[in-house]
Image 1: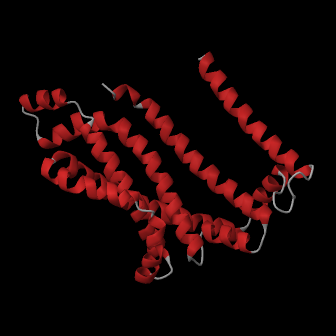
Image 2 (image 1 turned 180 degrees about the horizontal axis):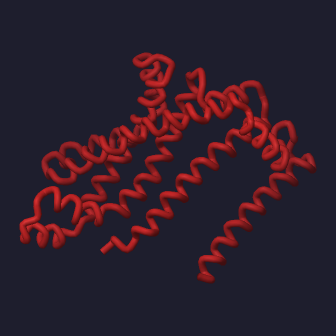
Image 3 (image 1 turned 120 degrees about the vertical axis):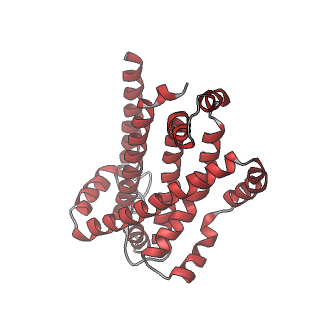
Amino acid sequence: MQGTFAINLARIAIIVAILALWEVLSRTGIINPRLLPSASDTFVTLGDLLQRAAVQKDLMVTAAEVLAAFAMAVPFGAVIGFLVAENRYFADVAKPLLFFAFSIPKSIFLPMFILVFGVGFAQKVGFGFFSTIFIVIMSTTTAVESVKVEHLTVARSYGATPWQTAFRVYLPSMLPVLLEALRISMIFNLTGVILAEMYASRDGIGHQIATWGENFQMKQLLAGVVMVAAIAMTFNELVRWVEARCSHWRT
């Protein structure tokens, strides 16, 4: 208990130190305040932005796009990953191709999504899906391969059906790995959607951030970055909390 408290205290101290350094660098003029507004001014601007109806609408648009892409990529990628892991021939054929596709920067395909889907909801959701699915497939494959063969042998020897094996053996064994994969997948998903919004979009928080940057509105730009970072970290910590509750299933 004391160890956890000390760790959390150290994390808070690091964050406070970074914010203090940020404030000092700006206030003293070591870094031009026009290029790096102070932390206090940035957070005041953040509070102001969150009260604006336009920003709230953009946040809702981005949230809808992220959730739509995530809701499609995770089950679809999980099914493919499961099939790859369970079929040796399919794995030998598909795994090198998956690693090859995963290694390619996804941003180079963004113009193709704009040409196919136009500028709108489908283009951003499609690119978010494309940015996420490969990591889901690879993570699911790893999760399936982490299931102990002895557990499967015992379940099948007792006459477990495929559905019972899936929910009583595979799922408990895979869940901790899958939760870790969900955290990483959401990072790829959020990055893909915001990148699509910044590149070509009429709405969304990524579009707002790009507009602020183009107009040299540094306070708004930094506030937008802090906003997106806070959202990503909140989701990350939520999944980590669930993952910690499921850690006893690693048996």
